[in-house]
Image (cartoon, rainbow, N blue to C red; front, top):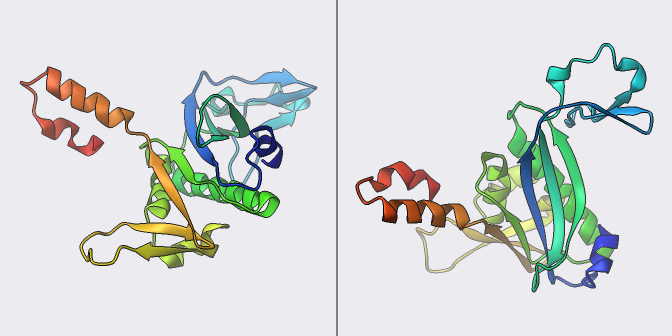
Length: 209
């Protein structure tokens, strides 16, 4: 993490963002440096690399088909993006939101401990696996639940004064706001589809907004 921020010339500043996204691909096992790669990683077991001796006994249906990537870039430019973590995931979506939250919390905690400054924003899309991270960055996650995750346990939520019915808040770490930047392109896409197909109702796309 610190090396990537050094390359971006933002180490010790907040002029950077942490982004994450998932990518699906054809599941397969390959041989690299005398080991089998292609298995999934979970907090309970790391099967991303296996001994070559297991080649005949391996179940190819258990290969990872999803990768979760984390990258960092400057906040004032997207010209350069550096990958800092790539995690192979399995087919199961159970507790994926917890895994994403745990990995993001670990990276944010490392950034603060190594450079002294968190990012100005975390960027992600509207996938269900990002739901907990989205809730935390929007100030919707209970403080008690945030105590289970690194970095977030040291944060507090500041509510807007004079807006009693506005549920969102500002996530702060050591009096520094951290914003959640949710990808808006999908919402714009569905708005365009609705506009060009006027015979369709908006209810079909309501959940996308």
